[in-house]
Image (cartoon, rainbow, N blue to C red):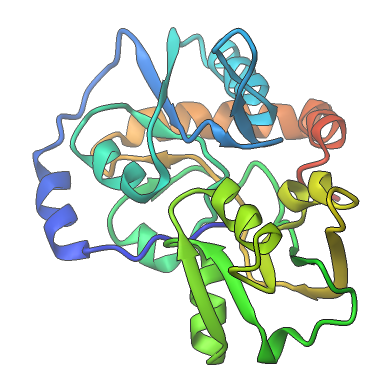
Length: 240
Protein backbone atom coordinates (compact mmCIF):
# COMPACT_ATOMS: atom_id res chain seq x y z
CA UNK A 1 0.00 0.00 0.00
CA UNK A 2 1.72 3.18 1.24
CA UNK A 3 5.41 3.96 0.74
CA UNK A 4 7.31 6.40 2.91
CA UNK A 5 10.23 8.38 1.55
CA UNK A 6 12.71 7.64 4.31
CA UNK A 7 15.91 9.13 5.57
CA UNK A 8 17.34 5.67 6.01
CA UNK A 9 20.69 6.60 7.41
CA UNK A 10 19.30 8.63 10.30
CA UNK A 11 16.66 6.05 11.09
CA UNK A 12 19.13 3.20 10.99
CA UNK A 13 21.20 4.90 13.69
CA UNK A 14 18.11 5.31 15.84
CA UNK A 15 17.10 1.72 15.17
CA UNK A 16 20.37 0.51 16.62
CA UNK A 17 19.55 2.33 19.84
CA UNK A 18 16.11 0.71 20.22
CA UNK A 19 16.00 -1.81 23.06
CA UNK A 20 15.23 -5.42 22.37
CA UNK A 21 13.65 -7.82 24.78
CA UNK A 22 10.28 -8.83 26.13
CA UNK A 23 7.33 -6.45 26.31
CA UNK A 24 4.91 -6.39 29.23
CA UNK A 25 2.60 -4.33 27.03
CA UNK A 26 2.87 -4.23 23.24
CA UNK A 27 1.89 -0.83 21.84
CA UNK A 28 0.20 -1.14 18.47
CA UNK A 29 0.80 1.96 16.33
CA UNK A 30 -1.71 2.91 13.63
CA UNK A 31 -2.83 5.98 11.70
CA UNK A 32 -6.51 5.97 12.64
CA UNK A 33 -7.49 7.81 9.44
CA UNK A 34 -7.74 5.21 6.67
CA UNK A 35 -11.08 3.41 6.79
CA UNK A 36 -11.83 0.57 6.52
CA UNK A 37 -8.27 -0.40 7.49
CA UNK A 38 -8.11 1.79 10.58
CA UNK A 39 -10.16 4.75 11.83
CA UNK A 40 -11.45 6.42 14.98
CA UNK A 41 -15.06 5.53 15.77
CA UNK A 42 -17.73 7.64 17.46
CA UNK A 43 -16.51 6.49 20.87
CA UNK A 44 -13.04 7.88 20.10
CA UNK A 45 -11.48 4.42 19.82
CA UNK A 46 -9.37 2.83 17.09
CA UNK A 47 -11.63 0.68 14.92
CA UNK A 48 -11.61 -1.12 11.59
CA UNK A 49 -10.06 -4.18 10.01
CA UNK A 50 -6.66 -3.70 11.62
CA UNK A 51 -8.12 -3.13 15.08
CA UNK A 52 -10.05 -6.38 14.89
CA UNK A 53 -7.09 -8.18 13.35
CA UNK A 54 -4.59 -6.77 15.83
CA UNK A 55 -6.70 -7.71 18.85
CA UNK A 56 -7.03 -11.27 17.56
CA UNK A 57 -3.31 -11.53 16.85
CA UNK A 58 -2.46 -10.32 20.34
CA UNK A 59 -4.82 -12.87 21.87
CA UNK A 60 -3.33 -15.72 19.85
CA UNK A 61 0.20 -14.59 20.70
CA UNK A 62 -0.72 -14.28 24.41
CA UNK A 63 0.31 -10.60 24.40
CA UNK A 64 -1.18 -7.66 26.27
CA UNK A 65 -1.64 -4.90 23.70
CA UNK A 66 -2.73 -1.28 23.63
CA UNK A 67 -3.39 1.04 20.69
CA UNK A 68 -1.54 4.24 19.79
CA UNK A 69 -2.27 6.60 16.88
CA UNK A 70 0.35 8.51 14.93
CA UNK A 71 0.32 10.64 11.78
CA UNK A 72 1.38 8.72 8.69
CA UNK A 73 4.39 10.78 7.66
CA UNK A 74 6.23 10.07 10.94
CA UNK A 75 4.90 6.61 11.69
CA UNK A 76 8.18 4.77 10.97
CA UNK A 77 10.47 7.20 12.84
CA UNK A 78 8.26 6.96 15.92
CA UNK A 79 8.37 3.16 15.79
CA UNK A 80 12.16 3.25 15.61
CA UNK A 81 12.40 5.74 18.48
CA UNK A 82 10.27 3.51 20.72
CA UNK A 83 6.97 5.39 20.91
CA UNK A 84 5.23 2.10 20.10
CA UNK A 85 6.26 -1.46 19.25
CA UNK A 86 4.50 -2.26 15.99
CA UNK A 87 3.02 -0.53 12.97
CA UNK A 88 -0.30 -1.97 11.87
CA UNK A 89 -1.52 0.70 9.46
CA UNK A 90 -2.08 -0.68 5.97
CA UNK A 91 1.64 -0.52 5.25
CA UNK A 92 3.01 -2.36 2.22
CA UNK A 93 6.23 -4.27 2.68
CA UNK A 94 8.87 -2.58 0.51
CA UNK A 95 12.62 -2.98 0.10
CA UNK A 96 13.13 0.65 1.13
CA UNK A 97 11.30 0.25 4.40
CA UNK A 98 12.93 -3.10 5.05
CA UNK A 99 16.29 -1.31 5.20
CA UNK A 100 15.08 0.47 8.35
CA UNK A 101 12.58 -1.83 10.04
CA UNK A 102 11.52 -5.47 9.86
CA UNK A 103 8.13 -6.79 8.78
CA UNK A 104 5.96 -9.73 9.63
CA UNK A 105 4.60 -11.90 6.87
CA UNK A 106 1.84 -10.20 4.90
CA UNK A 107 -1.61 -10.23 6.48
CA UNK A 108 -3.35 -9.15 3.26
CA UNK A 109 -2.52 -9.44 -0.43
CA UNK A 110 -2.06 -6.09 -2.25
CA UNK A 111 -5.09 -3.86 -2.80
CA UNK A 112 -5.39 -2.24 -6.27
CA UNK A 113 -4.86 1.52 -6.47
CA UNK A 114 -7.70 3.36 -8.23
CA UNK A 115 -8.59 6.89 -9.33
CA UNK A 116 -11.51 8.90 -7.94
CA UNK A 117 -12.59 11.86 -10.06
CA UNK A 118 -15.52 14.10 -10.96
CA UNK A 119 -15.24 13.22 -14.67
CA UNK A 120 -15.59 9.58 -15.70
CA UNK A 121 -13.80 10.33 -18.97
CA UNK A 122 -10.74 11.94 -17.39
CA UNK A 123 -7.36 11.20 -18.94
CA UNK A 124 -5.30 10.88 -15.77
CA UNK A 125 -2.03 11.17 -17.67
CA UNK A 126 -2.77 14.82 -18.46
CA UNK A 127 -4.60 15.75 -15.26
CA UNK A 128 -3.52 16.93 -11.82
CA UNK A 129 -3.54 13.92 -9.51
CA UNK A 130 -3.71 14.10 -5.72
CA UNK A 131 -2.11 11.58 -3.38
CA UNK A 132 -1.21 11.35 0.26
CA UNK A 133 2.36 12.41 0.98
CA UNK A 134 4.95 9.63 1.15
CA UNK A 135 2.77 6.85 -0.26
CA UNK A 136 3.34 4.40 -3.06
CA UNK A 137 0.65 6.26 -4.99
CA UNK A 138 2.52 9.56 -4.73
CA UNK A 139 5.73 7.85 -5.85
CA UNK A 140 3.95 6.20 -8.77
CA UNK A 141 2.55 9.51 -10.05
CA UNK A 142 5.90 11.25 -9.68
CA UNK A 143 7.75 8.43 -11.46
CA UNK A 144 5.22 8.54 -14.30
CA UNK A 145 5.93 12.23 -14.79
CA UNK A 146 2.32 13.29 -14.22
CA UNK A 147 1.23 16.42 -12.35
CA UNK A 148 1.17 15.55 -8.65
CA UNK A 149 -0.22 17.45 -5.68
CA UNK A 150 0.38 15.94 -2.24
CA UNK A 151 -1.55 16.23 1.00
CA UNK A 152 -0.74 15.07 4.51
CA UNK A 153 -3.99 13.15 5.11
CA UNK A 154 -6.15 10.93 2.89
CA UNK A 155 -9.21 13.06 3.60
CA UNK A 156 -7.48 16.09 2.12
CA UNK A 157 -6.78 14.26 -1.13
CA UNK A 158 -10.49 13.61 -1.68
CA UNK A 159 -11.38 17.17 -0.68
CA UNK A 160 -8.93 18.43 -3.31
CA UNK A 161 -10.93 16.72 -6.03
CA UNK A 162 -14.20 18.07 -4.67
CA UNK A 163 -12.97 21.66 -4.58
CA UNK A 164 -11.13 21.57 -7.90
CA UNK A 165 -7.54 21.57 -6.65
CA UNK A 166 -7.00 18.21 -8.34
CA UNK A 167 -8.67 16.30 -11.17
CA UNK A 168 -8.43 12.94 -9.45
CA UNK A 169 -7.00 11.18 -6.41
CA UNK A 170 -5.06 7.93 -6.52
CA UNK A 171 -5.32 5.69 -3.45
CA UNK A 172 -6.25 2.18 -2.38
CA UNK A 173 -9.49 0.89 -3.84
CA UNK A 174 -10.74 -0.15 -0.39
CA UNK A 175 -10.37 3.44 0.86
CA UNK A 176 -11.80 5.31 -2.15
CA UNK A 177 -14.75 2.98 -2.82
CA UNK A 178 -16.87 4.53 -0.07
CA UNK A 179 -16.64 7.99 -1.70
CA UNK A 180 -17.93 6.87 -5.10
CA UNK A 181 -21.35 8.37 -5.78
CA UNK A 182 -20.92 11.22 -3.31
CA UNK A 183 -21.02 14.79 -4.71
CA UNK A 184 -20.53 13.50 -8.26
CA UNK A 185 -17.39 11.52 -7.46
CA UNK A 186 -16.79 8.43 -9.60
CA UNK A 187 -14.23 5.65 -9.69
CA UNK A 188 -12.42 5.42 -13.01
CA UNK A 189 -12.01 2.05 -14.71
CA UNK A 190 -8.23 2.35 -14.77
CA UNK A 191 -6.39 0.60 -11.94
CA UNK A 192 -2.72 0.47 -10.97
CA UNK A 193 -1.11 -2.58 -9.39
CA UNK A 194 1.62 -0.84 -7.41
CA UNK A 195 1.42 -2.22 -3.89
CA UNK A 196 2.84 -5.29 -2.22
CA UNK A 197 1.34 -7.32 0.57
CA UNK A 198 0.56 -5.51 3.81
CA UNK A 199 2.44 -6.50 6.95
CA UNK A 200 3.18 -5.31 10.47
CA UNK A 201 6.25 -3.13 10.94
CA UNK A 202 8.56 -4.20 13.78
CA UNK A 203 11.85 -2.76 15.02
CA UNK A 204 14.87 -4.71 13.77
CA UNK A 205 15.83 -5.40 17.38
CA UNK A 206 12.48 -7.11 18.10
CA UNK A 207 12.89 -10.37 16.23
CA UNK A 208 11.20 -12.38 18.97
CA UNK A 209 8.11 -10.17 18.79
CA UNK A 210 8.06 -10.45 15.00
CA UNK A 211 8.08 -14.23 15.18
CA UNK A 212 5.22 -14.26 17.72
CA UNK A 213 3.09 -12.21 15.35
CA UNK A 214 4.18 -14.34 12.37
CA UNK A 215 2.95 -17.45 14.16
CA UNK A 216 -0.36 -15.75 14.99
CA UNK A 217 -0.85 -14.52 11.41
CA UNK A 218 -0.08 -17.98 10.05
CA UNK A 219 -2.57 -19.58 12.43
CA UNK A 220 -5.29 -17.17 11.20
CA UNK A 221 -4.43 -18.04 7.60
CA UNK A 222 -4.53 -21.76 8.38
CA UNK A 223 -7.95 -21.75 10.05
CA UNK A 224 -9.55 -19.31 7.59
CA UNK A 225 -10.28 -16.53 10.06
CA UNK A 226 -7.96 -14.10 8.30
CA UNK A 227 -9.82 -14.44 5.00
CA UNK A 228 -13.09 -14.03 6.90
CA UNK A 229 -11.89 -10.70 8.30
CA UNK A 230 -10.63 -9.56 4.89
CA UNK A 231 -14.04 -10.32 3.39
CA UNK A 232 -15.89 -8.62 6.25
CA UNK A 233 -13.99 -5.34 5.89
CA UNK A 234 -13.42 -5.58 2.10
CA UNK A 235 -9.82 -4.38 2.36
CA UNK A 236 -8.27 -6.62 -0.29
CA UNK A 237 -8.64 -9.90 -2.10
CA UNK A 238 -8.46 -13.00 0.05
CA UNK A 239 -5.52 -15.39 0.26
CA UNK A 240 -5.87 -18.31 -2.12
